[in-house]
Structure formats: C-alpha cells, structure tokens
Length: 165
Image (cartoon, rainbow, N blue to C red):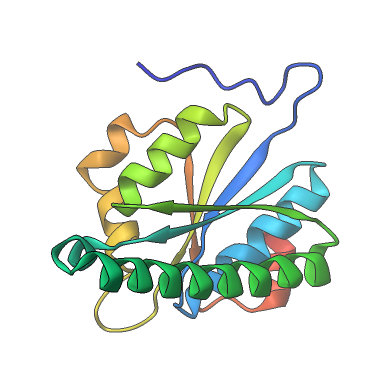
C-alpha cells in the first residue's frame, strides 16, 4: 500500500519529480515541471538514475571507476537542468542520484518523500516511440503507480508549455 501524500499538510508543499537523462525530451519535462512548480508554489525534484548492471561483473577497481564516471556525468546533467529550471521558472531543484532500475528508483523515492505528488516525464518524438520509461509507466504498471504521471510531448515549444503550465 502506498503512503498517503502529505504535500497539502501544513509545513509541506507539492513537489514535481522529473527523471533527468540525456534525451532531448528531458528538457521539455524540466521546463514544464519548473513552470508548474513556480505557478503553484511547489517544489521540483530532479532524479538521475545510474543503471550500472554491467559494473558488478567488472573487477572491483574497474567497477568503482565506472560508478564514479557515471556519478560525475549524472551530477553534470543535474547541474545543467537545475540551472535550466532556475532560468525558466526561478525555482531551485532538489537533486537526487540513485543506482539501479529506473522504475524502482522512482517508486522508492516517491515512497520516501511523501511531498512528491506528480511525476513528470518527457515523451520522445522519434519513430522508436515515447521512450521506455513512458511506455512502462503508461502501460499496465500505471494502475498501481503511487502518484499521477504527467507526460509532456517532446515536440511542444516553450510558448506551448507556458500556455498549459
């Protein structure tokens, strides 16, 4: 059973969660979530997930090096999107780095931070579809997901996002 969200209780505020990755549609999700957070006096949480499946099969020193490089890349991406959210919406973001499966990392973070009330994902515009995470969370997994999921079309302009945020 999912814990009740507490984002509307005194001393709390609703947070928008965005999974940060290297895809172009990630910018659209950060833009939308930042604008929504600013307009509703909410918060923004940016999550980077390190999927290190192959690292455990490497020698310890190599695995540590792979993990350190992945963390550095994740921190740079988080810094980039934190600056982007500040630029477009004037909001600061909480940054979180987790290791493992993306869906598990998302649900674990939502379980830990009961102020997270909405997950915002960007949908890809390529012929390969909206992306694996959007497909997974919009599919059969959606019925038991702990918070609403907002899917931002990757093709929307800043003006179009401003109109709906």
